[in-house]
Image (cartoon, rainbow, N blue to C red; front, side, top):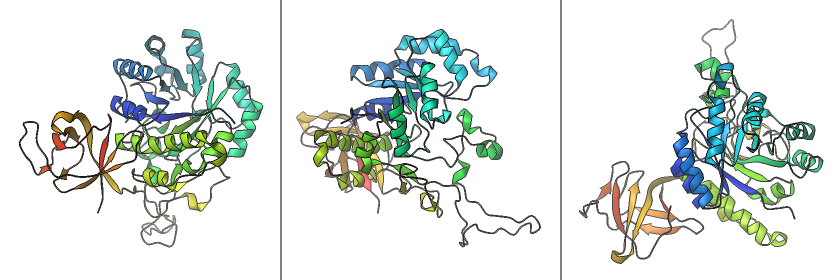
Amino acid sequence: MRNKPELLAPAGNLEKLKTAIAYGADAVYLGGRQFGLRAFADNFSLEEIKEGIDYAHSMHRKVYVTMNIFARNDDFIGMKEYIKSLRQLGVDAVILSDPGILDLIRETEPDLEIHLSTQANNTNYRSAIFWHKLGVKRIILARELSLKEIRQIRDNVPDSLELEAFVHGAMCMSYSGRCTISNYLSGRDANRGECTQPCRWRYFVVEETRQGEYMPILEDEQGTYLFNSKDLCMLEYIPQLVEAGLSSLKIEGRMKSLYYVASTVAPYRKELNRYYKDPENYRFDPNSMSELKKASHRPFTTGFYFGKPGSDSKQYESSGYIRGYDFVAILLENHCDDEMILVEQRNNFKLGDRLEIMQPGEEFIDYVVTELYDEDSNPVTEAPHPQQRLFMPYRGSLKPFSLFRRKKG
């Protein structure tokens, strides 16, 4: 059996980084405030990158930093100093797509590990070997590859070259994220980290001689979300991903919430561990999918993994998310002596609410809010204020990074 692949999670900020690690990520990827493709994520200052690296390394986990823009001439101003800083901070690898940036890293910090971004559109083993000869340690494969094609690449490249692929998250309607629609419609360049996702918008067709007559692309008076892909989900296919020879399974979502990170990392960690515990008798646990679906998501698709996707990979009716649960609080402290816990509010909740408590590595716990107290120990009936700190009764101790959610409806 092949080696156990790394589970790689997004980290939009320090809190998400720590949460991803708590819920089972082997490594996280993040963006600095320069040279990355998620301009609207929180992103990290150099000081925050250092704190994140120090924390991850203390937990024996890894941190990769994105530098995956398609660079213009002016982007190289200050880049050499930034690369030196990343090396000094101890980053485990840099993710890039631009040959010029790769060349600058090899010139500036030749020992810095390099991962080739999916933006580079690597779809065959000869390209993979080409990049490996230039010093790339890992190829993040194009999203357009099938499991069969990934196995063919694995069988034809050196063992020293690692392969990584996205297994969960939003899919781009364009080829591996290379898209100009956002630039054209809003002036924000998707290839420079500023995508407004206009592919999710609703479109109609207008015939040039019939101005003002808007015709739906499907027979639906509400129009159609023509380019709106479903979300990728390969949770049920861990054995196939492993046998394809992937070294890293990547979850998309640096702009997603802390709750999303926890709710997606946890079931993937659970199924990976279950598979490796007893590969021959492994059977997928449907409860893992139930847990995964408690995070906001679009309907799921397996993308290109089992062949070219058809019309059922698109979500024509709506660009919205399915949100069955609200994330309402995060644990801050256990106060076992007086059987209380301190939580921080993330969404309005009140006395009488039935909640579920997520704990890293554990099944969820049902919980009813019977008492609420503010930080001065005054009883309150609800928690309406963002990041309000409150005490609630709990007998025993909860794990750090425990989260509280409430079912909608």
